[in-house]
Length: 134
Figure 1 (cartoon, rainbow, N blue to C red):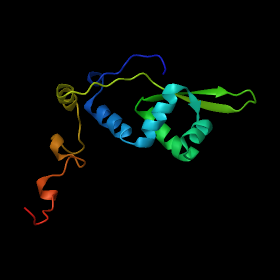
Figure 2: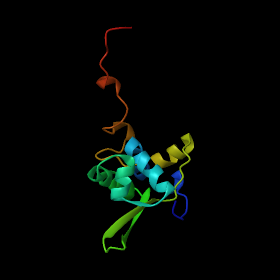
Figure 3: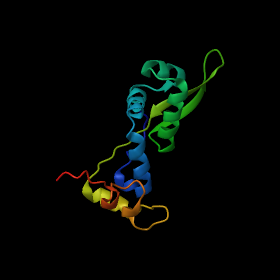
Figure 4: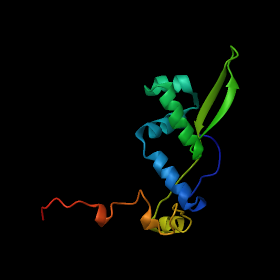
């Protein structure tokens, strides 16, 4: 893992926390982080090791890099090819009800000031179809 400071949940905004948790919700991205935490790697080799296409891996790497969970560095190989190496950044999240309450204070939902009105919020009663069984 690269050197750096740990990022705590109090160090990110509510919006950033939502993006980070959404990014971590994908099993492929968890596997990518695990792989680059062991050793930095470039796309072709990493794709072979993980058994996924380079195109799909690059999509996942871009999302991980966008939220700061991995970083990249461009290097020249011995034969002159440019290789982009990826490595995990140093991060740690300690989620508690209190830290989530603090993050919610900085959460912005488009078109609303009420977090409960978010389009991806849990199922609301009016959206829940009853099956007729009690």
